[in-house]
Length: 89
Ligand SMILES: [Zn+2]
Image 1 (spheres, rainbow, N blue to C red):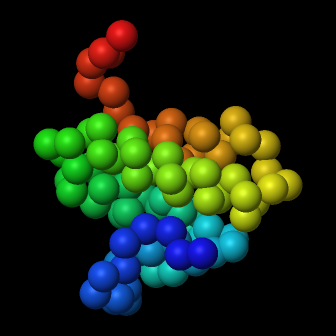
Image 2 (tube, rainbow, N blue to C red; image 1 turned 90 degrees about the vertical axis):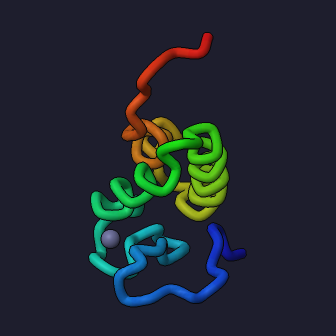
Image 3 (cartoon, rainbow, N blue to C red; image 1 turned 135 degrees about the vertical axis):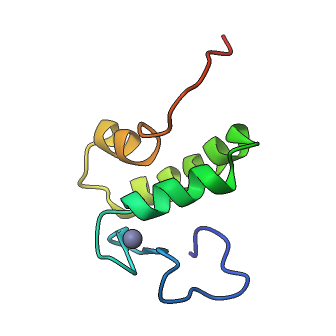
C-alpha cells in the first residue's frame, strides 16, 4: 500500500514517509517532520479541509502499520499539529 500521491516520484527533498515505520525519507524524523509540516501548510493553506482529509488517510494507514503505537499519540503526531484558525462547530 502506498499512501500519499507520488505522481512524479519522490526527490531527495520531498520528505515523503517511509513505511511501515513512517519515518521521513529525507531527514529521518518521525513523519510528518517539521519541514514537511510547513510544506503541507503552505500547500493546503487555502484548503485546510483537504489537508485534514489527506492527513486522516495517512493516519489511517499509519495506524495499521504502527499497530503497537497508541492511537492517541498517532492522532497527535499526524493531525494534532495542524493549527486551527477557527472552529466550525
Ligand atoms: Zn523530513
